[in-house]
Image (cartoon, rainbow, N blue to C red; front, side, top):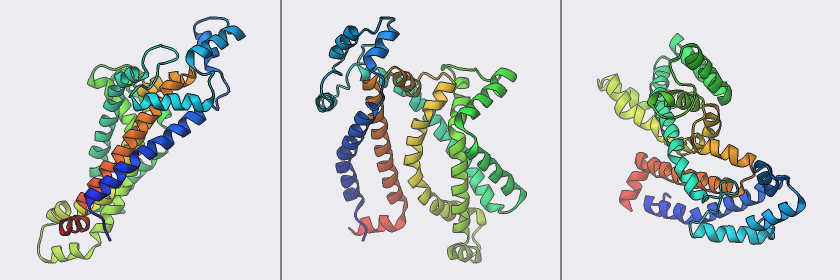
Length: 317
């Protein structure tokens, strides 16, 4: 028996604190498995001899000399007050630095998301309508190649072809729309392949339903059947992938931002991991976890709104 959309949303929202608590514990534990002492790394970056006395003094300043449980409780207390700590390296508030770089990452993720929908929807539909034709085979070959090519290798290939050889797009940095094209495409291509395959399968399955044959017998145009009925029903299961896709784009931006020198969260995360900047990594993981959970919540709600059976159940309730 289906539950109402409002009750479903309430249950999901109530589970959010527990999910984030589990993420915070795992992040706090695993990041400290790294054998390198952060105080030693920071001293070396400052070109100071990492003597035992200097390391101990810096550990006391950073608070990493306290017992593990005390460190975690102090950090959680700060998080509850929206204080994510201070960067070990820059000595600036972590939240300030991360949220300053977040718009750049959101920009590339949104651009990639638009490319995914704009390319995969028509390709998936065309592939389904011309099943087993040469067009279908070319599209499926494209999707297999897109899924198979590693993101970092694709990024370097795009830079070599369109920046170094043809000189169409800039090689790195951020500023104009031209700077955004290559990173967004490199980030989007693997997901485009998955979406095209999914849309093709869902559309073919819907085209084989009895309601399509009945509509054709009534003389309804194929274009009307496709737009008003087939595509709507095919998009319903696709909506469940949207939340994971947005989270994957934000997570996958780490590699793309490094390749294209894009000044976003991903590049900053890599630098923080190298420098053992614990507060930055912990805050980054929490931000991504929140985005994942909220995106999945939104897509689950969207799925329920698109599914006519669930909508009819909500109206009866």
